[in-house]
Every structure is written in C-alpha cells, then in structure tokens.
Image 1 (cartoon, rainbow, N blue to C red):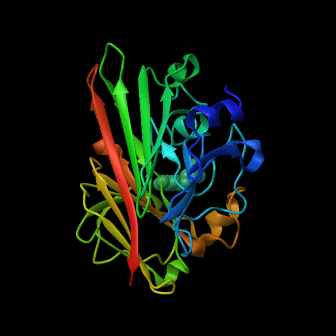
Image 2 (tube, rainbow, N blue to C red):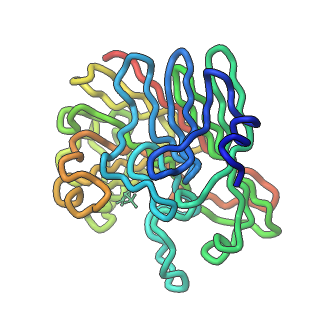
Length: 302
Ligand code: BG6
C-alpha cells in the first residue's frame, strides 16, 4: 500500500482532489468541484458523501456506521458484488451478505479533472481469498465522476477462462427529510419480489410510498427513479444504464433497532433506491468480456 504522500504525488489534483485519512483511520479521497463535493473511501470504493454546493447532502450516512477494514460502511453507496443479499451456499457459510467487494481495499487507478468535473477511477482484482468464495478471475473498474451530477459506473471484466455469473448493486442510500412524506416514481406497474412477505410476487400500484419495513426487488425496471422530497423541496433522480432490477429498502422501526451500525431513529431520514442486476437478472459474462452498469444521480427543485 502506498503512503498518502505517494498517493497524492501520483493522483492528487490541486484544489480538486486530495487523499487523506478519514474516519476510523481509513483512506479517504476528498473531491471538490465548483458544483459539488464528495468523499470516497478506498475501503469498498465507498462514496460516503455527495452534496451540490450550498445544498443538503444527497446521500444518507448513518452516524453509527462502522469505519473498520472488516465491516461495511452504513450509508452512501455500498457496492454489492459478486452476489446480492445472502450467498445461500452451504459450501461457503462465512460468505458475507452482499458479497466481498464492499469489504475489500480498492486501489486508485487514475484521476483527472476538467473545469467542471473530477473523475476518480478505482479498481479491484480477484485475490486468492476472493476465489475461495467466488471463483471469478475478475477486474472491477469503478469510475466516479463528480460535478453537477454524480455518475457511478461499475465495469466488471472476466479475465478467467470460463464464463462467470454474478449479481451487483450500487446500494444507494438517499437522504430524505422524512421518508413518510416522500414518494418514488418510476416503478408503477412493475412486478416486485416482496422480501418482507417471503418473496411474494406483487405489482406496484402507482408511486412507492414507505409505510412500514420495505425490502423489494423490482424486476425488469430500467427507467430512472425519482424520489420526491417535499420538505427539502427537491426531486432526486437516479437514472441508470444496463441495470434491470431496482431495490427499494427502508428498515423502519424494529429492524433499525436491531442493526448495531444504524441509529434507532435514523430510518425516517433515508431510503435506498438501488441500481441492481440480481435474482433473475444476474449477469452471465463470457471469458474476456466486460459488463458495465451505471447510475447517474442528480437533483432539481420540486
Ligand atoms: C438491501 C436488502 O438491499 O440491503 C436488504 O434488500 C438488506 O435485505 C439491506 O437488509 C441492508 O443490507 P446490509 O447487509 O447492508 O445490512
């Protein structure tokens, strides 16, 4: 691992991008552009903060999040890869929920800046340890573009000799003033698997409103989702490419209390609207091929 001085000498950009120490002593990249500011941890390639200049943050972070090398960060944009949810593999009982990518140290591959945006590219390769849990010989390249929008592109390349199958998610936690007053457009009429009702298949009637614990995998959903936040008087748009599923999650009261890294009273302040390929939309990738999934997050006054 390079020292911070070495990393900044190679990748730092004056007044735009600085690599330093964040919470828990973990390495954090701080990016400043005229339009926005962002923080990205190398642990999990985790975007923990994005705010347009002069506006409240778009991403929710739990005040109780762990910042430890062996724990996921709670909030921001965890990357789920190469599986989503529990692995459900008796041969691999210790496989972490949502895959290992959010628990691994990513490396900086490149940085660049224009007058308007900063681009940070992080990478992750298979290791002997990752191959014990999932056989793929992969390279993940995560391209984060920070400016008036936040663009997140996850490209998975299969460097192995055989095809691989994986699931993936940009598990975005959005800040809302009060989830009980917010609603989500973009999923009306879609079929979803209701994880709080034993994966029953249901159909979304109109906008999504959060009225209790919500954990749904919306299938065949490629359109943008719009989170309406009347208290913050803004609409947050999550547009996506090459993602066929959308997960909507809010733990509500009991589950929030059960999570040690999430405040008991934080559930009204967030909703996850996730850019996903999972379940029937898991990706099969031939040897030598690359699959790219992208989310572009923006906001506008309501
Ligand atoms: C969601 C899942 O995406 O993530 C939920 O659909 C899960 O089932 C939630 O509880 C949080 O997962 P974790 O591992 O970050 O606590």
